[in-house]
Length: 76
Image (cartoon, rainbow, N blue to C red; front, side):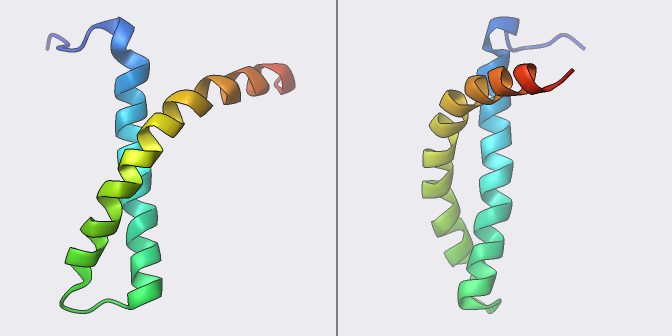
């Protein structure tokens, strides 16, 4: 199967997927804790997830290179 994303965009695609999945899980848990799970749960979860992802995606793009540098310094 031929990849359809150029290698130079790999960090951006990685950040997009990582931030999307993590914000999805965390917002779901937070919504369940704050509101409970009822008939409107899915609506409130998705309402919380989309703005969370909008913040998480650029944050991952900025923070990931910093974390990589820190890890390189502390890993033998």
